[in-house]
Every structure is written in C-alpha cells, then in structure tokens.
Amino acid sequence: MKLPSLKIRNLEIKYPVIQAGMGVSIGSAELAAAVVKLGGMGTIASVGLGDPERGKTHFVEVCSGELANVIRRARSLSDNKPNLGVNIMVALSNYREIVETSVQEKVDYIISGAGLPLLLPEYVGDADIALIPVISSGRAYEVVVKTWLRKYARKPDAVIIEGPLCGGHLGFTPEMLAHPETCSMDILLKEVKEVMARYGLDHPVLAAEGVTGKEDIERFLKMGYDGVQVGTHFITTEEAGIDAKSKQVLIDASNEDIVVIKSPVGLPVRVLKTPLVKRVLEGGKEKFTCPYRCLRSCNPAKSLFCIARALLATKNGDVEHGLYMVGCRVDDVKKIYPVKEFFDALEGE
Image 1 (cartoon, rainbow, N blue to C red):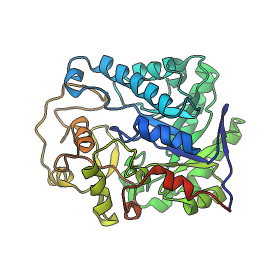
Image 2: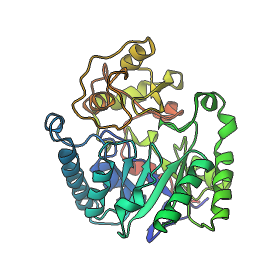
Image 3: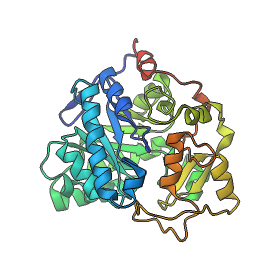
C-alpha cells in the first residue's frame, strides 16, 4: 500500500506520520528537524528545558527562553521547512507562557494534552497555527469542541486519539486499562466521528497507539484514521535527545517489564519497571524538594517522586533514578538507529 500524504490546516506532509513530542529532550531539535526533512511532522517537547539549576529560581523565564532556542535550532537544522510543531502539556504551571513562546516563534502547529486544552485558542489568538488536541474519548473531545466553538469560534485542525495501550500519561481509569477492549481504537474513532458529525467538522483524526512501522500505519488507515502519531519507536533513534544508556534500557526491556503507576501529574502513566518504579511500587517515597513547581496538579507533600528530576535523570542516563515512559510494544524496540531508517521503510506499494 502506498501511504497517502496528510493535510492539516495549511500544512501537508509526504507521510501521514506525526512524531510525538516526548520529554524530557527525547523530542529534541535534532529529532524534530530530521522528521520534518524526511517527510513527517516533527514535534519538539516543551517540558524540562533549560538549565536545571537556574530553573530553580527563574523557572518560567528559563523554560521559555530555552524553548525559543530549541525551535530556532530545529528550524535551522530542517532548512526552515514547514511542519515543525511543539507539544505542550496542559498540566504545566507555565502552560500559557509556553504557548505564547511557541506563537512568537511561529511554530506550524501545537499539540496539547495531559488535560483538556480548553484555553489554547485564547493563548494562540489569531496566529496561523494548527491546533491539535490530544484526547482519549469522544466525550472529552466534545468538551473541547463545544468550548472552542462557543468561546473562540475556533475549530480543531486535527485530533490525536491516544488509546489505552499508548505510552506515557493515559486518559483512562484503572478499570479501563485493565480491559482495553472496552475502549479500543476502533471504538474511540467511532465516538470522535460521531462528535465531528454533530458539529459539522471535517478534519484529520490520528491514531496514537503501538505504531512501529508501515504495517501499523496501514492498519489504522484501513480502520478509518487519517494518520498516526509515533512515540516509543522513536525514543531509541540516534536523534532522540537522551543518553545512550537510557536508550539501551528500552532495547533491553520486554513487554513484561511494563507497568502502570500513578504520576505526580495526577494521571496513570505507563512506564518500565526500573529501579525508581520498583521503589514506588513498594510504597517508597523518594527524597526531594520541589524548586520548580512545574505542574499545577502536583502536590510535593503527597507525591512519591519528582517527575521533573526523574525525567532529567532519564535524559542524563541515570538509570537508577530515571523514569522510562513507553507504550505496550517495547519488544519491538531492538536497537539505536537513525530515524531515516523508519521513513525509508515507508516507501513502496
């Protein structure tokens, strides 16, 4: 099957593939730029940027300044080609400032989840930027659509559906995660399509769950999706911005090493059972102070670990203290490889 191109707002890409904006620093300028040049949509992760020490006293300023630098570097590396965007978590305490920085730097699109991005159009204003919410149910999508239409007369330009087998933070209850067949990707697509029909919407719908290659893309296209978002399979690319020791953790892992724990964000999160996670599962609490206040929903007094510190440890290859978010198909992650290899395999009929 020859894969179709994908159009979102005024953007068009050769392959119907969006790279997930994974933090901290997995979604680097280098990875996003490479994906753009190879015919996909490259997404910068906006969380955990800048000097960690200076961030303790100037968190908002440091994050915004470094995000601007990363966007500019990605533009330069991609020869100023279009289809470069930013992923911004609603749960961030500096959500508005990160959105406004992205607007100032003229990104092509913003993906926003980990909460409902109800205020996103307000912060973007009339900038010509594609807005792509991330949802996990038709009901959540309808809340976004109704709010955007009523308050801002703005429609989503696409929507990403993250399924119950997806990696990272999950928009499902523990009961739903225990029975993923009750909220499978075909069921979620039907729910979203029903909402689109009620509101007269006609935009791309993208699947985010277990995409490791062309066969998975074809499967979702046949199901009725217009494209896919790829996360876990890009973590061990050469361009992903984390230490090689952390990439090796994923290569050595199997699907049996995957668990779901409660994140300081307030959502379930799917991760590998590494030393930090084992301590959390045993009821241990990591010793930490909270200089950043990076998440609105985090209560440091009750959280068993600091997610900012854990993800910085992952970036730096500190396996003992790192947090490794993954989808359910980590078995398919076999090696460190150039992202070009993934896109080369999408060619042909």
